[in-house]
Amino acid sequence: MPHATSGPGEARGPRRLEARTVWLWALANSVAGLGIGTAIRLFAGRDVVSPALVPMSVVFANVVGFTAMLTVRFVLPRYTGFPAVLRIPLAVVSLIAGSVFGSALAILINPLVVFYQMRFALMIVTVNGVLALAVGLVTYTYEQMRRQIEAAAVVRARLEQEMSLAREIQMGLLPKAFPKIPGLDIFGFTVPSRHVGGDCYDVIDLGHGRLAITIGDVSGKGTPAAILMANVQASVRALAETGMPESLLIERVNRIVCSSTDDGVFITFFYCVLDANSGELSYVNAGHNPPFTLRSDGTRVELTKGGLVLGFTPNARYEEGRATVGPGGGLVLFTDGITEAANAEGEMFGDERFRDVVVRHRGRPAREIEERVYSSVTRFADGAPQTDDLTMVVVKMAGATVATDAGNGSDSPREATGGPSAARGAPERGSLRGPAEAKPAG
Image 1 (cartoon, rainbow, N blue to C red):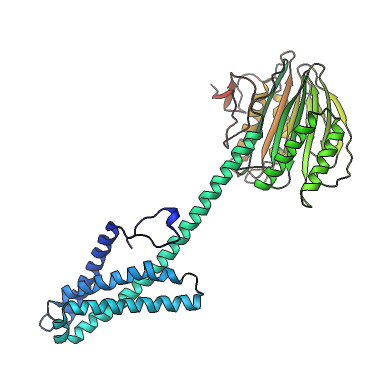
Image 2 (cartoon, helix red, strand yellow):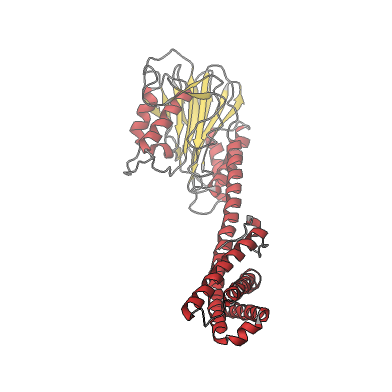
């Protein structure tokens, strides 16, 4: 049925009848009335039925049709709050009453024809009345569906706007630029599986060539996980600047998490402090996928010392581990969204593939290593939906150039060139963005 368009904000009330709607509705009613009147005249015979019944049928169709339309638009919405057992009978009675009223108006237009050919006039009244009732019920159903669709569209648009805002806020919490420390090459990214995610990373400049580096993963996804991780990130930043030992800092953060979350919510977290001058690394691993140091010859050392995940028990104690990042070596942190990325057959990318990509491209800049990993994961998934957040941080120490793969290889369709080594993450799915532009290789 022709109808006026309306914006989302008008979904709850009657819509104004626009001129275009009125003309289209009149045309439709006239065609229907003309068809009914002509059919009756042909059926009954031209000698029996007056030609005036054809235009009279058009008048009936328009009067009754517009009565049904106005009833649907302005009367039936008044019954919205009534129970169904009362609302439906009231709707039917209103439509019938409207058709009777419209018929009475039509009869008044040409009472002589009705007087001389009462039987056929009543036939026209009956046919148009039934038609009005049917049209009214169909129009009412359509209006109800339209209102529900528009109301859902308003809610969906508001939710998408709020989620987009939450995503912007979360991405704003990521490092806008990494500390510029001679001899260090740093890059990090995060790609949420939804608008917002439960993964997070941070790089904090503690001064004198010392960096605090964190990565974490909240159980669960979406806005609640993002809010919890933002609180943890703020707590870590505040405590890191006090210079307290790594194990004590994690114990404090764990108590904060336990006091502010429900049972069953936990966070895997890794916190470390790297001295860029000596390469010494002190760390605490709170149940996170073990990051690893990477030597220039490709050997790895996993960083496993620490304790339980955050949020499990407020009295947890954590052990501090130590390692060394030598010249030409690096530090690799990641979340399980990378290793557990699955293809359509349910096969996971896995630790072995991940480490193979990192080791094979260890001589490249930190950004390119991460792009090789990301493109390898997405190619392995081959279009399967991303079910977990992807997060990774790579820190490389200056040293001798390592001869690894030659050329661009087949692992990545892109090559990062130019600009400082810094990133805010991935504000859009499918892209790793930062001040350094990723250009097509070739």
